[in-house]
Length: 352
Image (cartoon, rainbow, N blue to C red; front, side, top):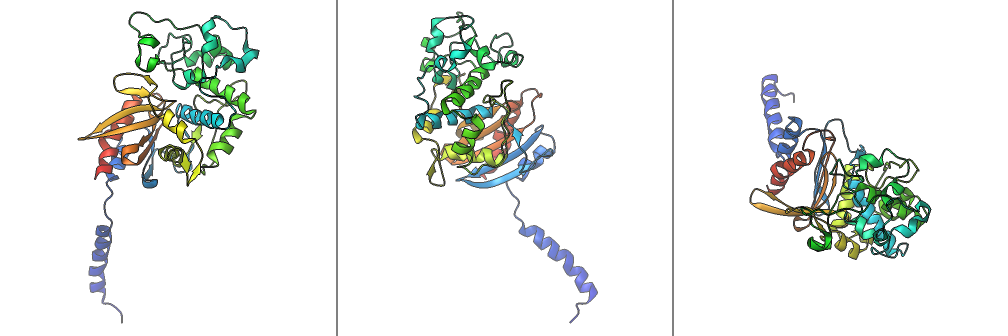
């Protein structure tokens, strides 16, 4: 029986309205709307997961699920995991291992000092070696921008002078955890060269076999030093989902789908404080440690951080992982932009 046209015309908009009403608004709609409105500049992705299940995944400014994000210094945290795996496999003796013996071909050193022989892997993992290296100080001899101008980045690092500690700077012995923090990309870059020599394989090959394949990561894109070693201090290209996989691996104590990938002891040591940056922030083994406040709630986090405000957070008390990628490389206060997005929009959406 054919429905009369007047009745059909009446029913069509009613059915459409019913379908629209059936779609429950997502608490993350406000997050996406604020980003698209330009309230938070150059955000490329937001991914939120609880208990390993993705609650929200959105892409902006031309990015999509296949985009390899250059998350800059988030790479350092990956490097820390690879060091832990190498130690577990007895390829590296431990974090107290001195660095210099791996690089006899880079000696004799400029600025010779017996204290250089005591610089360990742990010193580079915690950004607290005695080398004069500070990326946050344009005047520092070890500033990463100076390193990029020469060919041999490892020799650049080992040739640096020993730091001075003027009266307004705490010496390691007077600092929390006995370490004086100084952000140094050159040290983590040198860890990559050490890893290559210890494993007798290029870093990308070791990383694929030991880390990325076990967690189901897809295509990754490494950058390389002028001498051909993988750049382990920054620039690794990863998708948002693979960044989530890595963070989820640590949230689960180093296991993925019941299979051990990173030693549980290494995970625990990596996310424990080893150096203090400021009153609000501490540092583990290439992980940042901080507690965030959103509304009336607090969120303890360990997270990866890279230039432009790229952040990958694990909130262990809430079983949460939050990935925020950006291209805010030249924006003023990029980390503040990401923190505002996190505390003003993302975390409130999770609370609803």
